[in-house]
Amino acid sequence: MRLPRIHAARSMRLTALLVAVLALPAGTLVWLGVKLARQDRELLAQQHDTQRKGMLRNVTQSLALSLARAEQNAAEGVGTGDVVQFTVVGDGLRASPAASVLWVPRAPELPAIEGRILDDTERLEYGDDPSAALERYASLTTSTSPAIRAGALLGLARMQRRARAWDAALA
Image 1 (cartoon, rainbow, N blue to C red):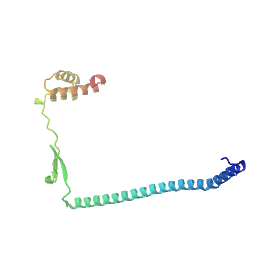
Image 2 (image 1 turned 180 degrees about the horizontal axis):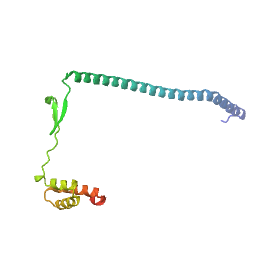
Image 3 (image 1 turned 30 degrees about the horizontal axis):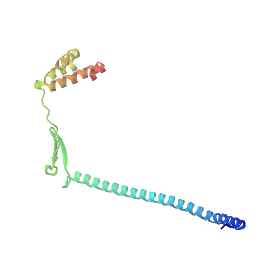
Image 4 (image 1 turned 90 degrees about the vertical axis):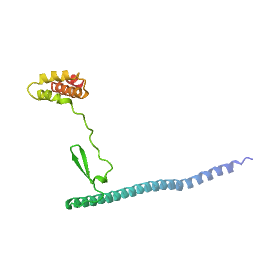
């Protein structure tokens, strides 16, 4: 059944009036909700920042106190059971007390070059006759000993670098 025209027009006006009356409060409510959500996010970020600053202050104070105690103990010569002192010695590190560490790193032992063959060549390099040192390094690069060959290649590259022969030194 179809409504007469008069009722249809009234129905349209009533709907428009209802929408107009509800739109303003609904828009205001949405705007206030968005504003409140933004304020909540800012407040939460501010609280996190305050917490982080407080934790950082606590850590800094704790570290300063611990460092002051360690300095005082070191000045008085008093050691605690949880302090290990490492000393660099000729063959690596020494820990004191040794029982407090599981292992101490040591430098690998390198094989000695037979008879220090490169000593004379290095004396020539840093002495009066660098050209003789260059020839000697070049002849030692064919050695069967990997240690001598490596030392000769390094010396040859060093001499070529000083002579500004960059490509030859890199090779």
